[in-house]
Amino acid sequence: MGKLLKNPKLLVIAIAGVVALLVSVAGGALGASFGLGQLGGPIPFISIPAERVAYIGSYPLLNSTIMFWFGGIILLFVAWRAGRNVKDVPSGWQNFMEAIYEFFSGTVDGVAGGEPKSGRRFLALVSTIFLVVVIINWVGILPGVGSVGRIETIEEWVHHHIHDLEEKVHEEHPEYSDKQVHGLALLHLLEEHGTDTFVAFHGIWVPLGNGEQKRVPLNKIVPFTSDELHKLEDKIKVGDKFNEDPVYLRIDQDIREGVVKEVFVGGDDKEYDFIGKTAGLLVPYLRGASTDINTTLGIAIVAMFTVQIWGFRALGVRGYGGKFVVNPIKQGPISTFVGILEGFGELTRTMSFTFRLFGNMFAGEILLIAMAFLLPLIGIIPFMGLELFVGVIQAYIFAMLTLVFGVMAVASHGDHDSHAEDH
Amino acid sequence: MDALGITVQQLLTQLVSFLILFFLLYKLAYGPIMGMLDSRAEKIKDSLEAAETARLEAASSAERVEAEIAAARVEGQKIVAEARDAASKLREQEQDRARTDVELMIERARIEIAREKEAAVEEVRKEFAGLAITAAERIVEGSLDVKSHSSLIDKVLEDGLGERKN
Image (tube, rainbow over all chains, first blue to last red; front, side, top):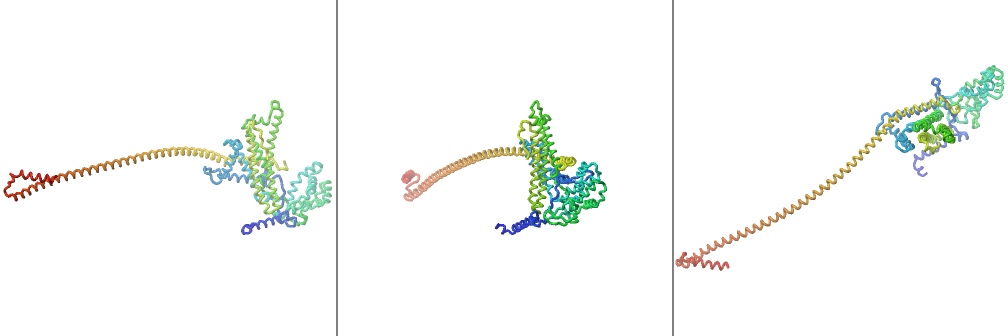
């Protein structure tokens, strides 16, 4: 403490840190309960499937695919710089790439038995998995990923959600016309999701402080009373004439406009007047590729498929296939059952690969969002570091498990007792 | 599957993307680097072997040089000792010769001196005889003839000289 007082630079830094912390606490979720909370970020709608941001022809381009290729291009650039002019005395990028390659070369040989070059066949896939996963994990936490996007309007939202309800109504009442089905489904949607909340956009921004407490419920964007809905429902059930009903027209109009219509009471029991502001959900243009289950499943399938190829190439069709398909008469039914379990094991490994990476990275993304909400501005900093670390660790786990499974697959039956279990 | 967002289309997209990345990474980086690392390992092995041979060679040549130096040292010592012997022998010879020379000179001088002395004595005797005769002539003026009395004179002289000699 004495040292701190003597050194003016340290003192200034310490004071700035304390002030930042206080501002952050006051501006965040804690401050919001005392009427402050001017800095909290909004909690966006968290969607497990990756969002579509564009169509190329009829092919829907996902925001996670964009980030996959963004990371991939960075990786390819590094690889190109490293490999275009290899020299015996390395420099620059070659040094960097060589260090990674040598590290994996050593690890792979070590796991595969210790002889030099004994793990050569695993090397390329294992290091590719590591590099690709680490780069997509890292570009996924760049600022702007997940927070810059398109506004999904109420009209689009209704369009996405009404489909299932329409099918349900149609099943229950096959006698209704399409129009009637649509009308009923819309009413059900309003009833079911009337308290769902949306973000009020100020132009193209969501200002800081428009956190969870200031999200607008659907029934303030498309105002209705349950009385109105009941009367309308009765009308719809009678016939097609309902679409001249003023209540129905008003609801339809409100959905198409998609702006806040009424003052609402926020989560902190205060009234908020966002009348006229566009309400909707944020669809991010970019999303970390490893937070999309398609990516992790794709890599896991490649990894486990290659493991099978290694197994067949090392032990032959009979040797490796004999691990899964066992003759119950010759070797007993228990061995047959164990063989079937081995086959299931390969599937569960694929699944555990998929969900381990997806779960860790998706949780990390949500953690960052939550921290931006709880401790705005500074709370995210240590967790960014944590996410960088988790990104490397997960990539390393993915690569190492692939290697271990590969080594187990090429090992002959006798020394197959020790299973490396998943983490 | 819908809730998780798994679609065949997207799954294939990501899967194929990964395979393309794998292929390109192999072409761009792993291939060249792997080849280079192998060739470098080979090179390092070769140069280590070369260094080992060079080291052995250097060690053996150092040994040889040392042996040669030792031989040269022995040779040198021998030469020095010989030179020292020769020098002392020469000195002795010179000393001997000088001593004999000196003795010879002394001997010669002694002989010379003896001869000179004899000559001088003869001369003195001759002079003395002449003087004695002259004196006797003066005394005995004419009574004594040189020829007739020479035997007497000789006798006198011999006595005189014999006395002096003795």
